[in-house]
Length: 90
View (cartoon, rainbow, N blue to C red):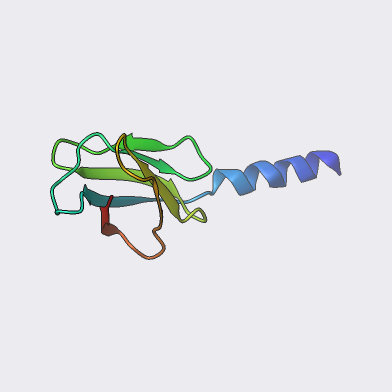
């Protein structure tokens, strides 16, 4: 019985789906912000914006929050539900 339960647990984790989310980070004037850290909340998955403020990150389905942080700006926690591309203003 214990072996069967362990197998089901492994099978559940092996089917976690991921999706690609892309976007751009700008300041209050609409100017791109490079070097912003983008993390999937509650995980170790992350990336940074490029010189044009663009980013792309693979996120695990079921966790719909990204956290954006950069020195000199307030941290933003954004719900990405149903959004394959979006713009974040810091």
